Length: 61
Image (cartoon, rainbow, N blue to C red; front, side):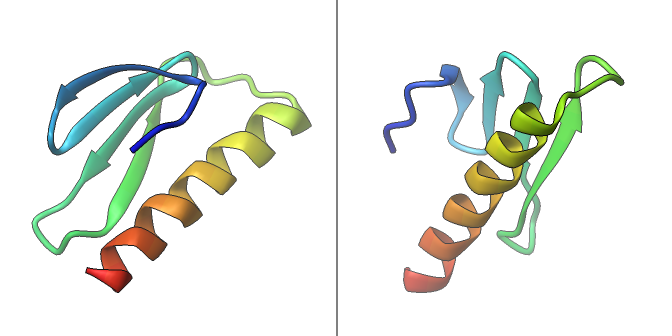
């Protein structure tokens, strides 16, 4: 998976980004845990887009 804003693959179930962590649950659904509590609208759109793409990829597999 290639997203320019993902900073590091922590494991196959966790990605660290500049905003927080994207984690895959046992159900294969991806969730987001923020590092900081404050987001601007662009950050929120980016996080939402990443989550949508991760979950769509799961549905295809």
